[in-house]
Image (cartoon, rainbow, N blue to C red; front, side, top):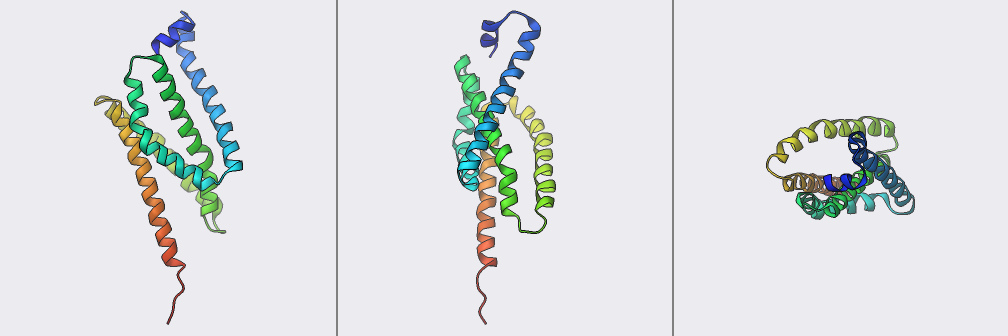
Length: 169
């Protein structure tokens, strides 16, 4: 990433702001893309496939960052931003659809916001610890989180199936 920034400018303030500007622009573009996907495809499938991709690509994405080539770093950052945008933009609508007809606002207000608060508070602490061991371990953390999500979805599906089974006397 250092070599890529050096190619653009030698001004220290621009060097400091350039990664932030690139990330914000790509994140907004990713949100627009995810909104388009959300409107034209099944939300649950999009979230499901995002987490499946995260399981298999979590480690390789962070392994790309350990290479000393700017293309690997840019590809890694783009994929991470795309995954985050996909999850952040589609998850509230999935929560809204999954909750019952009552308390939908409470589910989104508490569930999504507490989840985001927990993740944005807890994950950076864990990542700062894992960085000292290597970038690949951050990818393992992301893959483990995706596995936990899919496991929770599986348990929820089985629980719902048991609850809706007809009862006989």
